[in-house]
Amino acid sequence: MAVFRLFERLVDPFPADDRTPPDTSIPRFVAFYARPVWKLLIATAVLTAAASIIEVSLYGFLGHIVDWFATADRAHFLANNAWQLLGMALVVLALLPALVFGQGLTTFQAMAPNVPMRFRWQVHRWLLAQSLDYFQDDFAGRIASKMMQSALAIREVMMKFVDVLLYVAVYFGGVVVMVAGADWRLALPFLGWLIGYIALLRYFLPRLQAIAQAQANERAEMTGRVVDAYTNIATVKLFAHTERESDYARDAMQAFLSTVYTQMRRINGFYASLYLLNACLLFSVTGLGIAFWSERAITAGAVATAVGLVLQLNGMSQWIMWEVSNLFEHIGTIRDGMGSFTANRAIVDTPGAAPLAVTAGAIDFDNIAFHYGRDDAGVIADFSLHIAPGEKIGLVGRSGAGKSTLLSLLLRFHELENGRITIDGQDITTVTQASLREAIGMVTQDTALLHRSIADNIRYGRPAATDAELWAAIEAAHAGFIRDLVDNKGRRGLDAHVGERGVKLSGGQRQRVALARVMLKNAPILLLDEATAALDSEIEAAITDNLHAVMADKTVIAVAHRLSTIAALDRLVVIDEGAIVETGTHDALIAADGLYARLWHMQSGGFLAEDIDTPTDTTRR
Image (cartoon, rainbow, N blue to C red; front, side):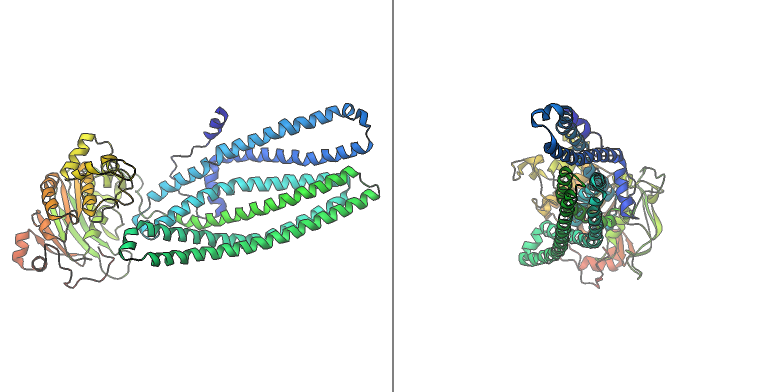
């Protein structure tokens, strides 16, 4: 219906809003995401208040009907009260449904679907711009779980707070006014009930909030462990550790279940206490009503109204109990997620950062230092290296020497502690990260593909590429196997999906898809980190000529343990403990009989020996 579509479009679920959410308090955090819908919240509040007033007034009208029955002439009852009955019929059959429908439009059409989606969109964009370290320090599944939980929690806190607060204030206020209108003494039990209800809330709600926050954290931990096992299912099966992973997940499930048990105990105590309080209210109001009626202080209709309101308040108080407990559970979820969603980005573009302009491809590492945040010496210190435009260099060294770290620093995956890196004279910290990485193509040994089609994965290098360019890259990477692929849903060739991280492909197939992707990207700077390590010798030899053709007009930095793959590059730079110890061509370094020569001679099958004083520190890559 058009009216539904109208309200569904009132809130933009995908805004272009990159502001940092506040991290000082939950109210400010919620208000940050509620600001775009505050007019709808006010409309919902007005409609809720109006509906509450009408519902309370219905009980007053019921009391009048009881009194009419006691005194009215049955033969002329309808004629004498026709207009009043007609007016109330219109209220019941038209006005109240219209108010409820309007409230439903603002709640269910405008806010319920759009508010959590807006939150997910904004947080997802925020998280995508976080550094690699952010994601390496936590489970991916845990982060995603927090985002999904918090999205719903934000919506519920915004909507339920208004709903519950207004419903209680208007409804209970109306009850007290209506009952006091019959006899002010009849309102005293309601005021006593309110004091007791507030006392119960003050005792139980902080305890429910505390356990809700712990529960949200344990739920995210449980989800993270389960997703971690699924993501690495091949490793789990390879080491026959399904039982170990079951136990690992069970520990988290048990921790989560413990919080649920504690939560349910407190809710049960709250429920029992509230039921007793409601019973006391019913007993006292009924007793006082009968006593006042006996004294002719109030009418039978007033007694019926008061008792009816007590019964309604009984049900409403239990509803409020659940809503408020859920509200605090959602607040605990938000509190748990705030730390993840308000963390400052470790690497940001400087104000006024301009796009990188690669005119020649010269790269300079100028006295850089980086230690992964450690105080001890190591990794890279006072490192300088000039790479001429179009030069092809190979980085050589034992594991932990700092080769891959240099590539990560060039891509600005980490911030330098000292010095600077420039490309054609432009400091990489002064240009946009997007333009920097668009100018660099990279293939790594650990190739992870997106759980999408082959075409999507290769076009990741250049989304606007034509089909002809796509197939040219595939042929250059000798990835013709793609034509024969069929996934479990019958999709073939380029449309076949590769599974999470490309698990449906072999290591060599993933490597060739990655090579095709970087060939399609055709960036002016090319980084190869063990780019052909997963390929067999026949395929590597077939690809080498095409790879050299791609490298022809680019600046290239290659890292390989298989030294034969980089021996023919323009220059080899030998690194040890983050410092350059030798540089030169393959022949010159062999003649120098230094570290490179020792590594070359100790290779077995073309791989770099790892037993020559190999550092044990695994943080250097």
